[in-house]
Image (cartoon, rainbow over the protein chains, first blue to last red):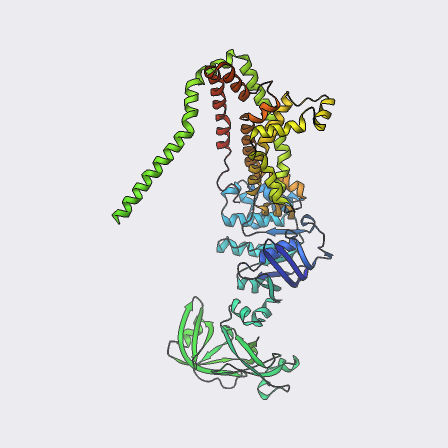
Length: 360
Length: 266
């Protein structure tokens, strides 16, 4: 388990402040943030390499206070691998291992064993990454910190190594905290996502919630939300209006019905946002398109406009619809786009549920 | 366009000429010295017992001074490079001071501390250790003027080792001292040996401080000076030429020890 509360640290001029999150024992946490956000500093603070200046840090059953890096039971893998250049690949893998047989087994599974006779300085970036992973896991650490370890791997090897690390994670039960730039990876791997920017934590929680319910328009934009509208929140009242009838979980959650005025159009949603200025976020994949207005649907938001752009990227197609001067982006499968014969200038209806609108 | 190309060419010619003259100024005296005295110097190695004894004394005292410098200077260099503490910059500046004072001044300063009239020198003498006028004085003078060069070069050697190698080793279970032994020292080794060679070469070439502390027995630099003042240029030439030739040894060693490019990019 990793539990940070109000964690602070300083590395040179950079300061990490007020970081609070928790990854359960055996869980998989992901740290997301732009370059310079403090992701590596966070990992190094947890490892005890960068001194902690504030807050508390719990590693497993004990507090990390006063515990030296070599006593924390942590394996760290940097993006640049940092293999010891004066040692062989095998000596690197066995460096901290107490059980050489176990270490060799890990190296075999990750595909590092065939590299044992190679000179460390002659390895490719991907090979270094694999050896560094094997070296860290060879010590059987209860906690594994990964700083973009798959960045230098080619796609085939990346898939294999990721799969093996997942399998080892399940088998050995260690806790992982991984820095990644890849939102898909974050969504797929993580039990907990921690969002950092400029040394501060923006948000943390289950990745699905962080992605669907970003705490600010900045976070929404950073996480790749296509539709972010500024506007005014109007609370329709504590009692749910008739249009919430199709949303069985709304009342149970105690949320209020809300109308969001985006200027060019109104959106309906539920939530606990206060009245006044705010932002509405709708992920592109939540928007459905149809040639005619959707009848017999529970979706409360139906807007019509003209398609201004259709961009296909493999299996996905991104469609931009002009709604009274405001662009709305829908992401759909290329197959659906083809079946609807979507083209620029076409009149189209965009539909999404009240629950797809997140206010922040 | 052609005018600017002409100006560019003229500037290149001037720069090449200035560079050539500069190199000539640095190398011509040594080349002339070796040409004039090299052969007779080599011959004297077989016939001149005082020269042989002097060279041996120089090599031994410089080696002892370099060994002491490496042993004492390595932890100091590591601390200055890796640790942040109050007064670090001041300590680093003070360590460079021996390089900046004129060497006879360094000799006089050492004499004040190690001479028989000083408390420390007196105590050493009482314990049977005579510093002034003995090989110990030579070692002390050599150490004083050359150790700062070692510390400075050793700091650079440690500075070239990315601290993250050490961090990784810590997380793999090693205590700081073990990390130093297993990771830092091997990675900095080439640079440290090069720093030791620089120190040794500087110790061999020292004259000003040694001549104050220990004129006799004579190291090679003192011997060449002694022969020059006692017998003239012709007698000083072979000794001087041998010293110039010996300077090639550390030069070759340093070239061999240059850090490999990308040696630490793993």
